[in-house]
Image 1 (cartoon, rainbow, N blue to C red):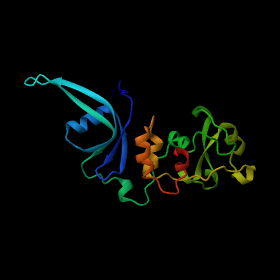
Image 2: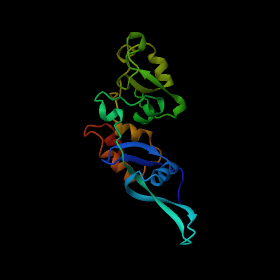
Image 3: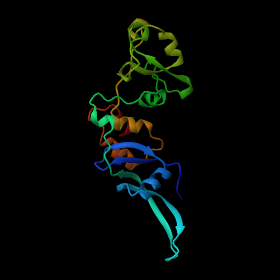
Image 4: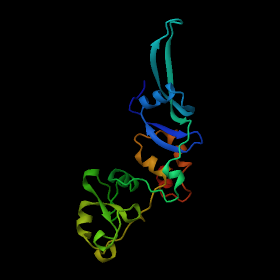
Length: 196
């Protein structure tokens, strides 16, 4: 039985992770003959029409990782200063939905984005200056630095690489997809300990 909501990891032909796609996009890539190879476990079989000559029904087996042909000169490959887009969902995922001041886990609705160096003090809206904070801690800290508020950061904020960002965007990441992505993480990635 297949799960049609299962994400498929798309890479370029060299194996660089690019994005998550759904089964419809994967079928389209196969139909356009853009698939270089597939890896990982077979996650579903898509049934098509019946051939008028052979009377056989077409079938396409989709795997958890799909590599495509073509020149994927994405920004993250050209530019050493690449910074993945920043949104609360991936920020909270980076910090494992834990307030980096009190250390408690919270539902997304009770979390907020906190600027370590407040914007009013010249702090930037960047990965390295943002942490996940519960609403209570963020309110207590207000427009002060953690030191001024008597609060200690439990982890140092970091900018994820493209592979780490792809992982953070994933839902229901399969074991073979996880293994593939972790192989692209820097050796010093804080995320390595979480997925081990």
